[in-house]
Amino acid sequence: MFSYRATAKACYVGYITQAAVNNLAPLLFAVFHTRYGLSYEYISILILLNFVTQLLIDALSVKLCRIFTVRTLVIAAHVLCAAGFVLMGTTPLFEGAPFVGLSVAAVAYAAGGGLIEVLVSPVVESLPEDGRSKASAMGLLHSFYCWGQAAVILLSTGFIAAFGDTDWYLLPIMWAVLPAANAILFAMVPFPDQAPPSEQPKVKGVLRRRGFFFIMLLMLCAGACELTISQWSSMFAQRGLLVDKAVGDILGPCFFAVLMGTGRLLYSRFADKISIYKLLIGCGALCAGCYLTVSLSRNAVLSLAACAVCGLSVAVMWPGTFSLAAAKYKDGGTGMFGVLALCGDLGCSAGPALTGMICNAAMSTGAAEAQGMRYGFGMAIIFPLVLIVSALWLYRSRRLTTK
Image (cartoon, rainbow, N blue to C red; front, side):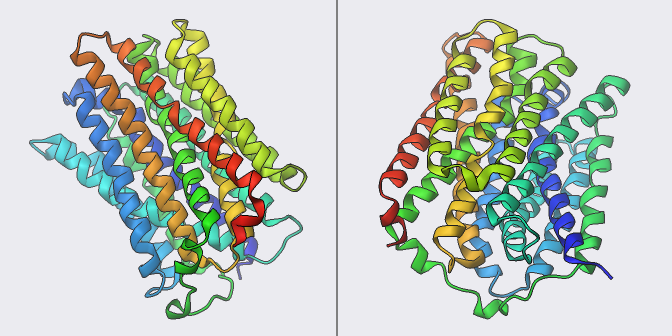
């Protein structure tokens, strides 16, 4: 007989799966570029497909949660992730146009990842108290995304370093085992008592509240701040800084994930003692500094260090905003988390896509590849700046956020 502790562990594995959804393909972008001739524009489209699909799922989730049970949806999410990873590893080998196969795979695993993102947080919110606050539980949950990201980078980079990129297609197939196994676990663990799907609270009331607009803006910027570096740092290290792939992946995106996870663990311990508004403002300032360093520095070590420290700067943005919304709008239900995930994924799409487009535009006018990437990171600084402004408004208007 499984306990709610097993349910929490299944949720943690769900976030590791979500990390694989967002970070496995970027580690293979250089392989796709060299082996299949995918341009930066096509790679940007793959990123966009991932997060646009998650956006659509986020938007549909409000309706889906009123038709199907959470258990049914979360199991379906993991099955879609497993199928997408298998397709990623197999379709480019048989398709005349590998981009088409990779696009189909991206849609499949992104659909699963979008559902996981919407469903897992409210499940953890609804679990019986185990001695920690809801904000602490949310910080701990989201830290598993970071450990998953670090695991994806280390294991995948180690595989390619050991066996070369000829057998790259085995990687996504092996990663498919994780969501497949977790789907089985979710079928057996207990779920907290929840209202029937048709009686789930409607989110329209929350949307009409003035402060919720700024919380949505926080989520958008949090997604953009986190994913721009996460998606492009491996490619930037290899093509822009001319660093060996294994070294670049470990010093850049892997350290990024470790520091982000460390930040979220610290948040889970001290969430009740720190003002989330001040924390978001400080993290936004640190994030802006990291983006500025990556954009302006010509030193490879300093640039990679800024990529890594950026992980610490974005650590609290996503879980902190979720916790803030859950505390302020207790009647929001699963639909509110769907709206927040929609905003976050909009940022996850906009940030990396904007960086890729600016890079392409700069290169088309004669800029070097490294300089084009730096221009892209420089433009992305707008997201932490908007986050700071939004957090300042919420901090100064705390009484308005519940009206």
